[in-house]
Image (cartoon, rainbow, N blue to C red; front, side, top):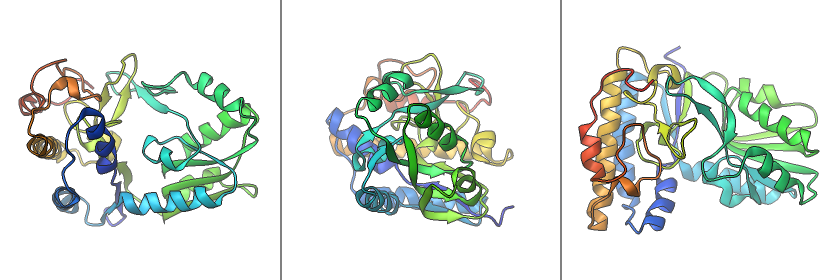
Amino acid sequence: MKNFPYVVSADIYLLLEKWTKQKNFVLPEKEFFKKLRKEFSNKMFKIFPSFELISDEEISKHIKEITFNSNIYSVSIDPIYSSYCNFYIGLTRKVDLKGEYRGLQHRFSNNSLQKQLNQLKTYNIKEICLVDDVIFSGVLMEKVIKLFSHIGINVPIVCAGIGTQKGISRILDNKRIVTCRKIYNEIIDEVCERDFYLGIPYSGRSLIGTENIGLPYVIPFGKPMEWASIPSEVQKDFSKFCINQTIILFEEIQKKSKRKISCADIERKVPGQPETGDYLEFLKSITLKENVYV
């Protein structure tokens, strides 16, 4: 299985581009992100020899082309690529503090799923091009297609940046086109880059019953082995590396911005994060005791 690709879709630059503008910070140049991603890739190659990092530019270009040429309304369920679509539906898979799945629900900044769907229904739309960043198992996309079907909206086109043959087969039929920039027959796993970094918007799995708390795929907050196929014997070392990468990232933002980053500036918090105080001090204080939160 180690010979199969392990795929990560790059997205932290695009997410931080919006966040830095909103919070009046300065986004580091792309050269910095290139170096950061090189370090991340080198770490992943040691664990997964067939590691692949798919650029956000590559995914964006594909989604933009498909939605522009589809001739029907497009709806994104991924916030990053919603700017290329006519509509956005904010939904996420919620978990509890033990990491157990608690269902498909709205994202923190959006109305309930039903309200969002009802709003879309008022436009009298009959069919859409449905957009997401990744089709992995196909289970989520299948559920979303059924949600649209229940309100009388057909989904003849599904567009994603990355897809697996298994996931595509689950939602493909003779009345539906599924198009992806890259398709894999077999992979170890596919994970969004943001899920390995604390404090990035939409990072990790959403914690149920909270406003905007995520569980990134690192110890002590998440489950790197179960959620991201990181081997158990290296998950602690890998988590330490990811937290250090996060520190390097926010140190650079702070340096470029010439002002400190407060915990209050971080929208996507983790359990135990204080409401105020120096964010970098908090990151440096994290101890890697397994299963503290999950």
